[in-house]
Structures are given as structure tokens and as C-alpha cells.
Image (cartoon, rainbow, N blue to C red; front, side, top):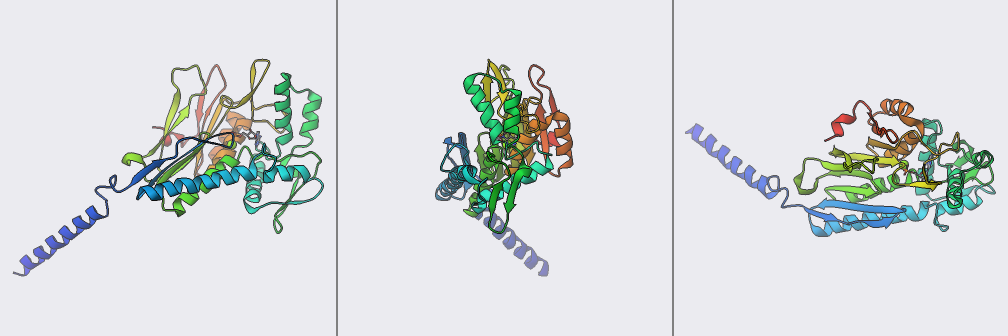
Length: 346
Ligand code: AMP
Ligand code: MG
């Protein structure tokens, strides 16, 4: 009799358990979540796309709009080309006086300096004068002279910036210096967008700005992973996607000379400049970094483009939680990976 009672109680508990599971959507996970896709929207000189998985349509849409609010805001603050941005205002007067900036811009400048130090100047947020020179030369269809490179180069150097944390001011040591956050701002905007999606109730999301991506949580259609295609730098190859990456959560950033470049005398020059020589980065055709933060991935991808495969691998192997996939220039397009990259390749 005692035994029968026990079995009865167990059965009742088992039934309650199954009902609870069904109710909270463990078995019908897909039916209980909604997927929203922003489609491509122009921003930061490229396109951004946000995909959100949430409990219902209203939450998913709200997450997308909150994410774009951040992306537009960061673009407005940090754009090099918008004369009204905080960075342009700083660039106009930071030699004469220390210029106070908002905490977001200050944070990105500080991160940029950190990467300047870490990469021995391969990443340099003061690269502006050299980028401008290459752009002007591209317009005139000439390559820069040694003298021009020297003159612009004398106005470049992250160690020529003075920051003051209390007031959050920035000052230039040399007249004509120009901050350019183009190598890191996309990643920062992605991280902020992910943060606000999490706060707004997103169960999972992917934020893509110009091919730099971060994702987390629940995936579309209950897939096991978020899948991210890496474009083949060899644009003539039939294989448009070089690799498909699989991630549960993390960031992926790619820098390459095949999407954005300047054209002089019919030759492509990368839009990434080596601060030490003033020349455009030639060593790699594409660099993809996989790590936790999109800000770090973005800065490291730009830096490794300058450092080249050998030094780049060394740096990334040393970093905890970062992997790299690099493609050498045409015509070889040789692929080099760090030791842990394989686990992300589908
Ligand atoms: P990305 O596409 O992230 O590699 O960033 C490229 C952009 O970063 C360029 O268009 C420049 O605005 C800027 N940039 C170019 N060279 C460097 C460099 N050595 N360090 C930091 N930013 C750079
Ligand atoms: Mg970058």
C-alpha cells in the first residue's frame, strides 16, 4: 500500500513537470519566440543589419530600433567625414586647447590608444593625416611623394595625444593632427547595440555593420549556431564564401583591401595605412579576427592588416580568447590560421 502511494505521487509529479515544460516552451521553443530582421540600413559609410529573437514581435522590433539608435548616435559622434561630429570638432581645435569630449568618444579614444600600445603602433587612431594624403593622391591619380609622406607622418602618432581622465579632455602635441576612429568605431557601435538589445529583452541577436559582426543567444529557426559567411578576397573565384563560421556567441571582424581601397594608376591601395612607413598595408588581402568583443575584433583586424601574417599570428596567439584567419595577397591567396580558429569553421 505504501509503495502504491509513492508511485502515484511520482506519476503526478511527472505529469506536472511535463506540463510545465510544455508551458514554458522548452519543447516548443520555436513557436514561443519571434524573429525580426531590420534589413540593410545605410550608416557609417556602409550598411548595418540587426536580427533579433525575442518573446514577441513588439519586443523584437523595439530591440532593433534601440540598437539602431545607438549605431546612429555613435556615427554622429565619431564620423571623420561629418563636420558636425564630436571628432571633427576635436580635430579642428585640439592643438590650440584641450578639448572636452563626451564619455563615449573618450572611451573609444582610450581603447584606441590601448591598441596602439599593444600593437606597437600598427593600430593608430591618429592616422588621419596619412589617410587624407592617400585620398587626395587618389583623386589626383598620383602616388604620394616621400616628402609628402614624411610631412603627413610627422602629424601622426598615438603617443602625441594627451588625455586627461578627470575632465575627459584630449589635446594634440603637434599642429595638424587628426583623430580617425574608422578602424574601431564600427566595433564599438556593435557592442553598444548588443548591450541595449540584451537590456531590452532580446533572447538572441546578430548585429552586422559592414561585415563586422557580433551575436549571442537564441538563433533563428532554432539553428545550433549563428552562421557567418566570410567573403572570399579573391573576387574572381567561383567560391564567393571562403569559410562559414559557427558561433554561439562572439564577435567577428574582417579588414581587407578588396572591399575598400583607393585606386591610383589602376592599382589598388589598401585604405589601411602603416603609421611607420606611411605606405598602405600590403601584406595581407584579408584578416578576420574572432573574439568576445566587437571593439577588440575591429581594432585587431585593422592592426593585423598592418602587421602582416607572421607578427599578426604571434600577437593573436598571445591574446586570450582571440583567433585569426588571414589570407595572403593575390595571386596566392594563401590561408593562415591561429591554432584555435578551426573550431569556429563549419
Ligand atoms: P577597418 O575597415 O576596420 O579595417 O578600418 C579601416 C579604417 O581605419 C580606415 O578607413 C581608416 O579610417 C582607419 N585606419 C587606417 N589605417 C589605420 C591604422 N593603421 N590604425 C587605425 N586605423 C586606421
Ligand atoms: Mg577595424
